[in-house]
Length: 93
Image (cartoon, rainbow, N blue to C red):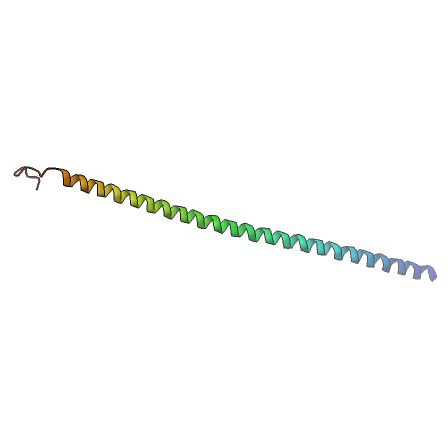
């Protein structure tokens, strides 16, 4: 009877030790998950920032192209004004 009681006490002590170890492991895992969540959030932020920057760059490039086209159009218009008038009666008018 005394041996059974000693064995039971030993089992309870082992269970308590295992429980404490499991709690420590759970806390470690929680900390790892927290750090992982922080990294994922940071990566999501960086991805959004990169997308925004790409959109901004794309818009800037589009504005640059529009400006170049307008400059080219202005240059053609200025060039046309310098041309002598076409001769009368050629039928171009």
